[in-house]
Structure formats: C-alpha cells, structure tokens
Image (cartoon, rainbow, N blue to C red):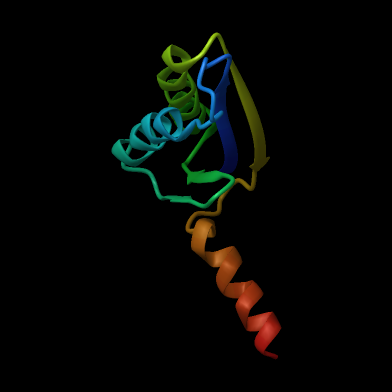
Length: 101
C-alpha cells in the first residue's frame, strides 16, 4: 500500500504563515517508522504492507502536527494494490523506462 499525504496546521499565529517546524515533526515520525518513504516539497509518500501499518504512521504524523496550531489539515491519496511491494521506487522506475523508450 502506498500513501501520499500532506499534513499541516492552521491557526499557527505566525505572521509568515510558515509551517516547516510542524511538517518536520510529521516527517520525523514517518522516518522513524522504518517504512520506505520519500518527502518532496508538497507530499510525503510512505509504503507499507497494509492499512493498519500505514495509517498508524499517518495518524501519528498528524498528531505530531497538532500542537503547532488550532487545527490540522490532512490530504491523503492511496494506491492499494495487494500482493505488491517495492512500488515506492518501482512505479518511478517503470515511468522512467517508458519515458526513455
């Protein structure tokens, strides 16, 4: 199971609107999970064997953001493909091969 998610607080009280400290707390949870993951400027991707494993990490990452604001926004997209693993890299490798053909 692959999940791409973005979590951020609002109501932070910061004039510049920056949420990087909160996002860092969430990404730290993801990295400490030991599951394959990747973070870009907009989303964090995580791969795990099942719903419970992946969603536990997403939940804990969301909870890590909560102290930074009065509310939390979570955007999530999932690719549920039973029996497959290594797709966090495999999908990109297939894409790059297709582009190169």
